[in-house]
Image (cartoon, rainbow, N blue to C red):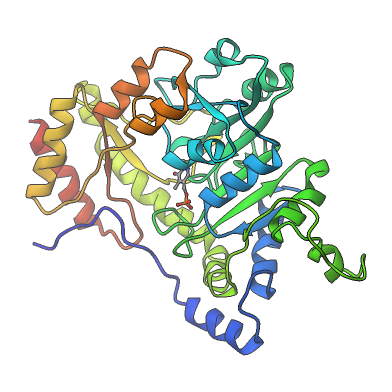
Length: 377
Ligand SMILES: *Cc1c(COP(=O)(O)O)cnc(C)c1O
């Protein structure tokens, strides 16, 4: 029987045409026509003030940390249950990740713990929208505002998802998105920074252009351009942007197809949940998700590991998620835990992610579900 991989990157079929056009246009570095189209699309679809493409979400997070003015000793509150670069973006500026536990339902940062985690050194809160399901952004923003901290959304998994009608990534001061091949809308490696706070736009454009005022120069606002601030190579190539444009054009279709697969899993596993053999993902009413991920929570680590092993035996690749950062070697060296981490540790032990990619057939889904059912029986 064919192996079912955990992920298979989806192409719409128009990527080659767009890349050829980019070559014909004679502009392959950052800031070309496709990059501008992608940024305009993101601005329209998310409602952000300014979208800037980046080479990855990790670089968007580093870009955000620079813009947020995070410096040595500054603290940034974030969940421990997240990807490495949420934290490393802060550490690269000399900042200290302060880890908090997540909510048992969404596995997002537990907003009720924020107040206890902030200190006079808190410079920002990095809110991660796990599985494309939004954090309680109103509460996050309120607590951050009460101590003068910025809110940066790690919306790496959040393209096409929203919280109370607002696109993920467009709610905090800054938002970071990923177009990595494992995400919903992709270009291999890619990302974007959403600049929602108008006051940060001018500086963001300078940092994006390697710390120069080239953007102003291109608009004819200054007669030459020069080095004026910090910055880095924060623009992806036009080849990546051309690929991405093909995907953004199909973003609604991609999301609908993923949601159909997500729904098929969700319906099928209802019976197992009723028997309390598993827990399915919980999506609060105020969240519209994007089917980034389908995961199950098993009662304990042993049973989770058995599901992964049995699926592997059946040629199906299912994976766990997030070794918590607070107990990782670098997390202990560079950060600290501000709260007990019971939910984080438990989720990390009990969670299994199932294959979810466009092209997965009903037969595949049935085979995967039977694999899970057999492992549990
Ligand atoms: C994927 C991911 C990232 C990193 O995105 P890249 O584009 O691969 O750099 C960061 N944070 C979260 C929560 C992610 O899921």
